[in-house]
Amino acid sequence: MAGLSCHSSPMNSMTGFGRARKPTPTGTVEAQVACVNKRGQEISFALPKELSPLEGTMNDLLKSSFDRGKLQLTIRLEIQKGKARCSSAQIAARFAELKKVCKSLGVVFSPDARLVNELIKETSCVGTDVAALEKTAVAVARSAVKHCQAAQAQEGVRLKKDFLARIKTLERLRSQAGLLAADTTALQRERLLKNLTQAGLSIDMQDERLLKELAFFADRVDVTEELTRLESHFAAMRKLIKAQGSIGRQLEFLLQELLREWNTLGNKSPRIELVQLALAAKNEVERMKEQAANVV
Image 1 (tube, rainbow, N blue to C red):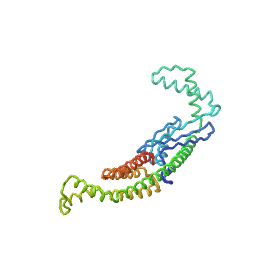
Image 2 (image 1 turned 90 degrees about the vertical axis):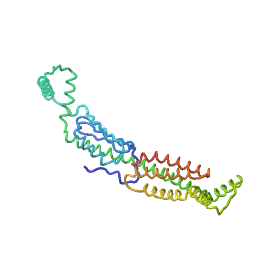
Image 3 (image 1 turned 60 degrees about the horizontal axis):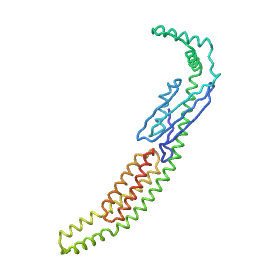
Image 4 (image 1 turned 180 degrees about the vertical axis):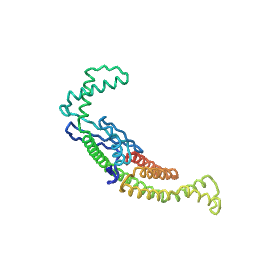
């Protein structure tokens, strides 16, 4: 069975719900599809016994229509009274058949009104056009899947808007960090020399050991590489968000890399202002990670 592709629009949410109903000559078939976030794909069913042979078909439908998520398909069959009536002869035949089976198995046969009622229900269902009922059930399930996908796409639009707004916030924080980092090395070098002087230590700017220490210190507080990688990650994220298909796992990876860069920047910087910026950025990234867990 050809699946209903959910790849046609960028950034779909895993959260969605769809419902569809269709009348039949003997009643109504209703299908519900619910999906919530899950790292992989998990599919479960709740089908009436009359439609249990369709489980494989329904599994293929859901598997080909959704990339990720915990999926639940529920189908209800509402047989209307007065539809698919069965004759007394049909009920009697089922009664006799059941009695014969019990005798062959050595089981005591104790019929009552409840048993007769169950036989009426079963015989009514047997009297329906099972092939037509299955065809209707598949069509209704496909409609429910489409409605669920539409809900996921709608939520995906909201998620995309939120991601782009947060990326813009992170880019602003990165620009501020760049301005603060520009004079950090020179400022800290000046502070270091001042502290050495105040401590009464002689400073020989030709001393090779001092020069090495100053060079090592400059390298340790330099956040140029982190700022460059952050800019690269922002560009990659914007491109990914506009891409087609399943992007959730790639998005989670990029966010983890962003968190790593901001964490390194905050740890390396001796300036409290830069540390505060890094903390603010990490909070934004953590919120984005929570959202990314719900992206297909």
